[in-house]
Amino acid sequence: MAKLPKISESEWEVMKVIWDNNPCSANYVIENLEEKMDWKPKTIKTLISRLVKKEVLAFKVEGRCYNYYPLLKKEDCIKEESRSFLHKVFNGVAKDMVLNFIEDHNLTDEDIEDLKKVLEKRK
Image 1 (cartoon, rainbow, N blue to C red):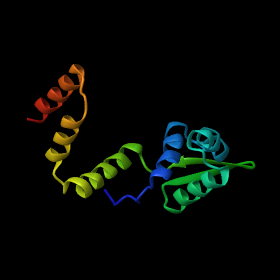
Image 2: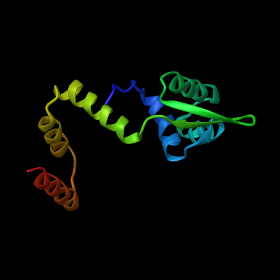
Image 3: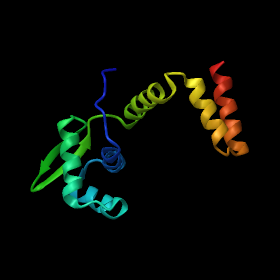
Image 4: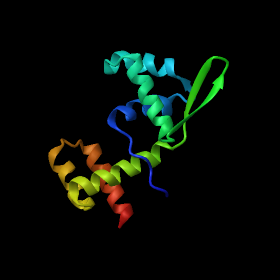
């Protein structure tokens, strides 16, 4: 897989809206993020423009409306962010990351069973 562009935390918020509702207009994104993030419409439009420049988003012009859609799959971006986080914080050692999360979070019995199943499959 080719290296994916770096997506900032703010851009991730925009992408979440578009991944869940694609294609959608800038106004739709603004309506969904304006209050939640306390951002101005101009800020949101700037983030959309950045994502278009990074070739993460594209758009179709329909009348006077620009409808944006993702060029990258959400799953691919999550994997890339996970790899980046793993290398940056845990020097690429997955076991250290997993142990840290397990020790620092309250896991339900169901969570523990799910983890056991995943680990058993990986054996």
